[in-house]
Image (cartoon, rainbow, N blue to C red; front, top):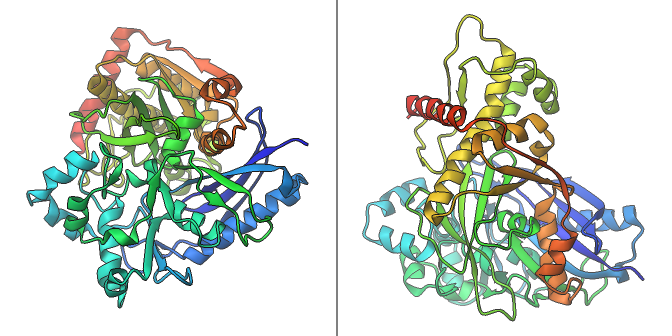
Amino acid sequence: MEKFILALDQGTTGSRACLVNHRAEIVASAALEHPQIYPKPGWVEHDPEAIWSSVTATIQAVLKQSKITPAQIAAIGITNQRETILLWDKVTGKPVYNALVWQCRRTTDYCNNLKKKREAKIIKKKTGLIIDPYFTASKLRWLLDNVEGARARAAKDQLRAGTVDTFLLWRLTGGKSFKTDVSNASRTQLMNIAKGAWDPELLKIFQVPAGVLPEIVASNDDFGVTSGVPGLPDGIPVTGIAGDQQSALFGQTCFEVGSSKCTFGTGSFILMNTGTKMVVSKAGLLTTIAWRLKNEKKTTFALEGGAFICGAAVQWLRDEMKFIKESREVESLAREVTTTDGVYLVPAFVGLGAPYWDPGARAAIVGMTRGTNRNHLARAALEAMALQNVDILAAMGKDLGKRMGKVRVDGGAVRNDLLMQLQADFLGATVERPKQTESTVLGAAFLAGLGVGFWANVAEIKKVWALDRDFEPELSGKDRKAKMNDWHAAVARVR
């Protein structure tokens, strides 16, 4: 009887369940959106019960679609939106408040004040992260201080807190397992990433009692077994958990030092494997844990950088500018011209992310003439997506002291051949597009599979990763340098 891995991908806008076979093929997939809640400007929440309902519904849907029996599921892997935090009752499992989403900015004032204090250096040194509402710690502090009775109940060991992976694990195991993996823990700003443990000093700074937090384990550890899950029998092991971006890095089999992946989504997220070395960035990037495998004493670290607007630039052309009706049309529109004719779009609609970290920057179109048309702007949007990534990848190479050799890509936008060629041209390195671009799902499946011996080791996993096409740079070094100089001049105009 053929076996499969059930990979659960719980994201910001919805949940997916996928069945993955031994050849790393997604044989069935089901997805369901869940509501976004905006109580106040800048506040973003999710209903935890809606998250759980979407997960169980997709599990049942993918089994029905595939006609695979639950007995054929060898293990379950989870990947998730990372910095979102939940707080629930230890006994009943009932949430005491909505989940505070990674996008939520309600703790901005607190974070701004914290940046001015001496603790700021301690936080950066121990966590590898900048102080920002994006991360979990300040949001958990807000929940404990603002949900009636929460801090008192936490002190009495009546509450449990965790990122989405921990909440799903709790529900999948019927409340028997309270764990998280190192990759998710490293995004909370409460973990000492050098030691791989919750840090007493950080807990004191953010006023979080240690008792509410889960046990930190390896990314392919024995997390527990299913119990009372609709549509699934009891006893299926959960053996893989990783935050979405780390999961994509693993799914792209970036196991060697210096190997990197870029996920093209609403924004773009780039991670580079730095091996066992915890590289402290001097170029505006984040230091994070990529994964730790059980039975190995080593932890694999990564450098991370993200651009807030990537595919969202194309959505802007579609929804606000009305240049196209569907996002996929942008490629044909951009191919109508061979250059942007000197036009640059700097898509700082919500500020600039890595390596600039300039929240006050705003978008601009630079270099327009009377002859500029929508074709030039479409091409400028695609170029901006690639140019932003070059800045991040160049910063990674600088921090690591290693020139970029190639980068693997995933996400919906990578089907755009022009975009991929532009990325290779501007980077001056090979861009590799896999046959299976759902790398986040594959990462969760690979980790879970390693946990139960579905795949023997990472060497076997590398054999099932398949290349669709690589894109080689066609731009000369001189033209590439001129392009980057012009781009940086455009970026300077918005800062």
